[in-house]
Image (cartoon, rainbow, N blue to C red; front, side, top):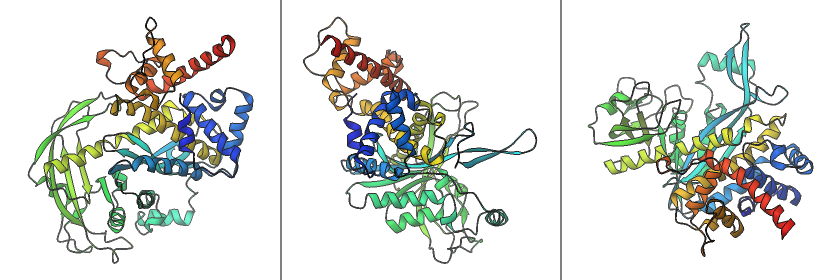
Length: 476
């Protein structure tokens, strides 16, 4: 595969030593050519494997420098679009089965057989993925990978006693959503491209909307709280109405079909939903430490509801909140389409965990794993990009991804009795052939190849290229 992509993504990286910069490029190429493989198999020989372990052990390697260079390359791609979606989400990596790994944090608590608390240990990653309005993942524009500090007994007692209310938002774990929104706005402040931040229910925080208003940036959030709306003051309990009952009184403005991807053993399906929308105001909670500093905020809500759905499936019940005016059905459907693209970041996490098997890594310390995950998240993005760019730009030249020798080998693998064409095939055709290397059958009913076939195909094709290179050196 064309290895120039890694040079582009890490063109601005400065790890303090040119050898470290070069090693980062080499590691990225090795990892994308050998998905599903551990470090030693990806690097293929002892010298390269030892160099990889030294890279991740090197305390002078700052993962933010790695992601920072990729961010600049991503912003360069974003600059070609008038607007993009900045999709935020959190994922958790479990390393409890690697008992010698140090520096991990507790992700969840379970009761063991002998009535002892058993903690799931791991790391947390909060990312913001830039996605074009037609669904192409452009790269990661903000990322935080961390292990929560151990909570003191005093803080734990305070949090439990006050239900986490009195703590300032900066001290809560949910502050990561607000921090990422600020970083996204800062990253785009010198570009003409408009970022629209899209988040799921965990970001339904008054401070999040307040910051969006302060920064004059657009957001789209799925509501989590059935809060009181249209209240005259933060302290008023007499006026106001709960969000869901308020929106259910609105007239149905139209219907939309939503494609629900397969999940939790449920097959992919099409949901027919009604659409309502309206305007309202929200105020900070009366328990908020900043209730006297913050004013009312005006938002639009889009209520998407599925009246009937198949057995054992959960009906769609989405309440989408945005600071963008929604006055027509077309504008409401546009926002619903944006929210449906939020699934892109879930797929990125799937590529990381299932395609690159990052939870099997045994680097023994949290700091090393953080550096490893920062590199692998960029590799995962690249695999995801390869899968979707062929769908969005099917007639583009395959030279975007493959050099001349590579596409010719691909062509002859699946056209053994034909002569090589005068011009390179399309990008879509070459990605289909790569997917066929990974088990995709390319029948009419099979649709487009997915990420799984692409990452498996990349691994097999890398071995084929290696064999072709050896044959060339032997036979000329």
